[in-house]
Image (cartoon, rainbow, N blue to C red):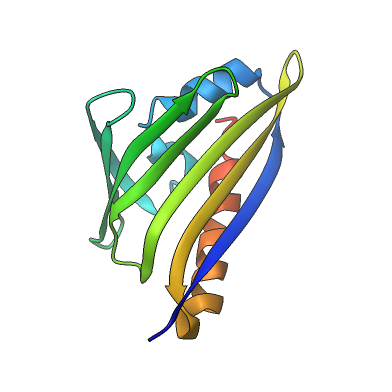
Length: 140
């Protein structure tokens, strides 16, 4: 089974101050608020770089992620997936928040991962939909 490396990017404008959005993301918890139809609960152990969040998916699956980088000057954070039922490998997520106006910012969510050629199309669609749902709820 051969794998390909993929990068999927979604962006949106959020009608909140960039710092408020950044704080929601870098907190690394509360993910269930951003994808409420999919996520049952989230438990975060630790804080800052090295924090691990366990995401309990409705239906019983679990995803475990680790915060790997925080760049406060760029409002950029990165995380990796340690464990997932999805057929993706070496997943890294990158959030970047860009201030536009006092109460408006742009948020970019990039997912970089490897996937088998046979599952590429399906996983690209699933990840893109997740990104878009997540971003659409950041103002909640």
